[in-house]
Image (cartoon, rainbow, N blue to C red; front, side, top):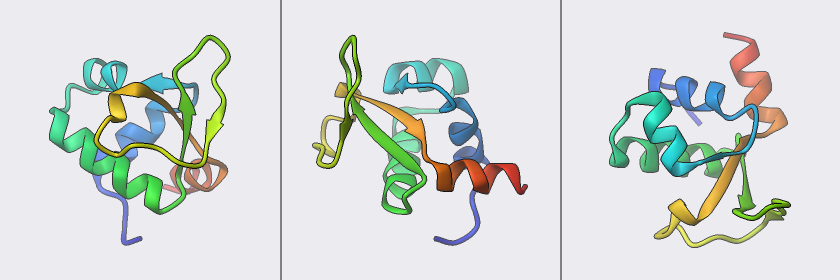
Length: 86
């Protein structure tokens, strides 16, 4: 992955704990398309982990990219290392 954009850094910083797509929209102020695009790029780069949206979130290996609102997201170790070195 190329350098992180400002919006990607902002999203990673919000994902220290499990966060939903809706919470990311309200906390960052970014539009739906920006968040979706950044999440997809960060997931493909291994910087975000995906979890089921349940009382006890379970890490998922597969997800429906058309329904990102159905999941929770958390920064991975790789993503955390990336934002700590900025």
